[in-house]
Length: 302
Image (cartoon, rainbow, N blue to C red; front, side, top):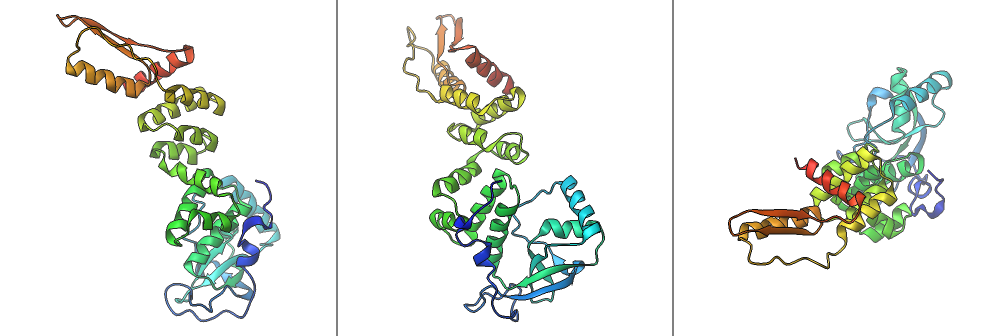
């Protein structure tokens, strides 16, 4: 991920501004009155078993191989960069930044770890965790989207305010948030890196969730490129200018079925029926790839 510059709005440099000595906590959350701007008491060695993980950590999955490598480095060289924590009213500490170092230190069974001690409200901790991870780790697109959404809901931010805090264009923030409107199965695939954000963004333009899932299946089974997915979506979303009218009146059941099939398959459907009930069902396609798309939809619904 490209190195972030000072365009991060209230980035870590501002958020973690050193000030006065740490103040006394007054409730189960960190102090959040007007005088509780973030402060530090310098670096202290803190017992690992006195530290709780950050509930606002946007990263939910940690690469175990990378953690093992970091643990090996810590075992030989120690923790070079201190983690950042806040002290809670119950005497314990809560992680703000540095969960990878914290986890790696536990892997090599260190008893304590160097840490900066800060004062921060829940909202500030959430903000710091998000910004710190965006700066230092490769969050996947869904983790970023969920973090943005949490900041908006928990901190009562507008998309414009959020874009300023994370140093992103509002359109970028909006594109991430739109990912949360995709079906759960698509979101899981995005989180597992089975599809890219560009794949997901192309699928957003399809309104029908069943068709989105069919496209997901096509992407995974055929390893479709983003360009191929965009072409597939364009074909499926293109307006159908010509719908052949049937001679004679079709029974209501046949008319309803024709409309359902047309909506699901996104292709022209013709139904011909004799008065005795015999007839033909015709599905039109525009190309070989369109034909494969239709067959995949039929098999998916089998």
